[in-house]
Image (cartoon, rainbow, N blue to C red):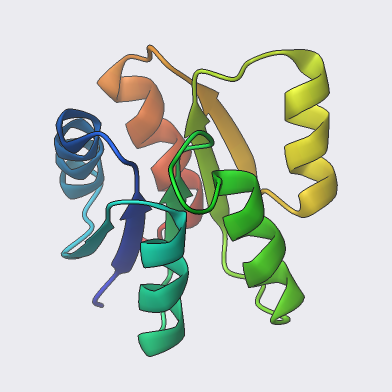
Length: 121
């Protein structure tokens, strides 16, 4: 079974780290987005099984990405991977419809565990 994941982060280094964790969780198709606007454009072009997004990105934030994806009626799992760990921010993301939340810096095993929750084996 093919698993397709969209990874949105404006840091190329962070995208590489997330890609590595996703691949170790059995994800075989990965599409990378350099910011929120790019992520939404790519989300509209093809179906995804999981979305991983940073919060702080140019053009559109990760919170905007979540709100717009949910506004389209999609229930695709979305994991926010961000430095924004304050309780108020987590609550905003939950209200927007995020499926899970992981604060940076993180261990690769922690990200893999989050991905594994949403990726069918």
